[in-house]
Image (cartoon, rainbow, N blue to C red; front, side):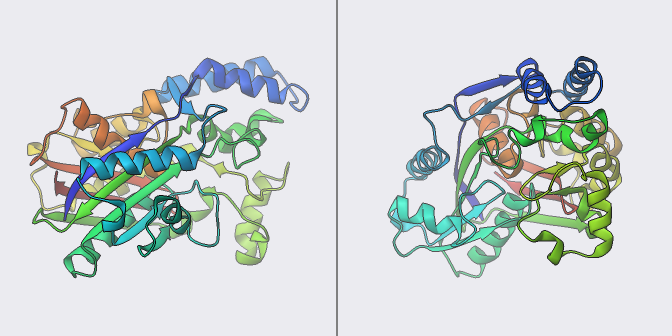
Length: 353
């Protein structure tokens, strides 16, 4: 499988760490019990310690579907192909406007892909990696000849899973599961794939007993989970209804990840010292540098987190395209993508770019 082209489109509104804590202060001024100034200063220090500087949100005149359509047109032009030549369209990630039908179908209609096969993959920050592995199988089985993978991670839309609900805090204990909210940026990406003869290796691991650590529950979620999981979740989040709201225990997720990420990385049949660039999931540059130290790959990571934040399923394709634009990587080079995700799941996979 070969990557013919990748494009990334960022929205226009830049949000700094100081602006983030100002939003928390504004939305919490009537709800918070305790010393609000001390709490937002603590949040600022935690964000800065993670490596965060800025991230990008939609401006008032921007929409996810238009940014995604622009991104698709750009990457199709790079790949020298038309929208109607795409056999399979896979939409990945958490940001979406539709539960039914597949968000891929909505985009296909807009792009004039009248007979393109469509499906969605939802696996939190692992979604793009899962889609890539599925595309690899489809292409090598000759089921499809050209596959387009897209995402539009725009979760900071007012009234959504993050904003303003997670910015109105009531006490400092809530920071434990709210902090990752303040790291999430926005972006759309599009990736065109065809068969080619490039070699790929895949390694995945799962810890499904940790699935409760990062969730966005839907309507009636209590009917779709066990009593034990309800108790764990409701004890922490009793202050408000969880429906449609992100809760993510970032410290607990990162505490678990180090040993698991080392295992998937070292399971690859590669001489890691000969790899120059590894693309990590963008959840915290500080945490991932620590994981790199544990795994013995210090100095090999390419980070987009400080400038763009956590782009969820868009993190990896965005990083790959930015690194290519900066001439950090080149065609024909062997690279590794390295992911830890809610679920929990972990992956490392290598490929020739």
